Length: 86
Image 1 (cartoon, one colour):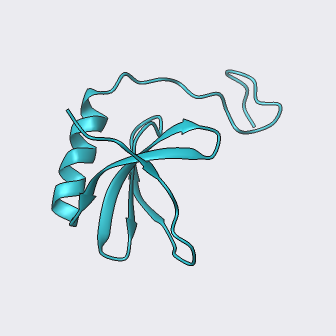
Image 2: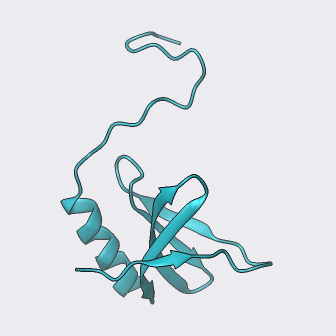
């Protein structure tokens, strides 16, 4: 369906997040005017697809986000308990 390639952050560049899927499985990122979708493949490791102009990368990200199976993530907050009010 989509060709995924290992993502390597270029030195001295800034990657910004434009959108995330509901559980952050897919992330629409950009570096300047170049957009792409990312997915994590392990701790600190990512793959990318859909690199190009906004319209192209956004349509890829929308398709991926709409078709994925939602995977609830554990809370990043320490001492978080389900249903507890903070």
